[in-house]
Image (cartoon, rainbow, N blue to C red):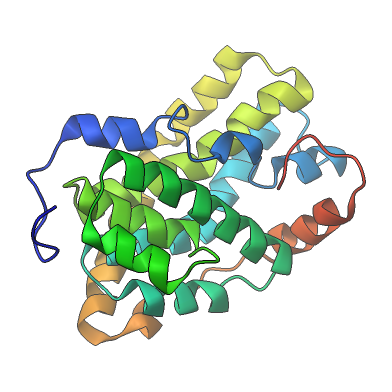
Length: 233
């Protein structure tokens, strides 16, 4: 990208690449809290999975989508990273978010090289939070804030759905049907995230959502302490 102040023309193919679970950003190794929920008996079938994904979407999903959208709109990613830290009370989740951010950064710089990604990598060598990196990546790929928000909303629920197939032996058709039923909610969350991001760009990061899910935080710490686990988080 020759001019960091501008983005190339929007590409739907780039959006599909970024949202594709096969994009080498490390998401396949994380369950989004689903593994600990299965262990605790909170997810045992498709109905439970739907409830879990819906709750995650409207809490951490909304917050992360707004962070990504704000980064796509050009907000300072270092400020957004501090905002993400403040909205992630669990040390285990902060560590996972930065690890995923590092992995996404490597893939993004190889796929859509640009000065903004290079600058973020240099400013935060230990890794920025994954939604912030995703937003800068979306900007580098010529995508808009809505694209970034939808991408985050989708990965917020697709990660646990894919993990449930492996953890429970859930029928993949059932897991996919869960995602399809949640599509309208994903759209609503993405729209709310974009509106909040635009407000934050105008009036500061305090306007970003800070939706909390204490049980997810507690479960993340319990999961990190388990000696044997299938997923990193």
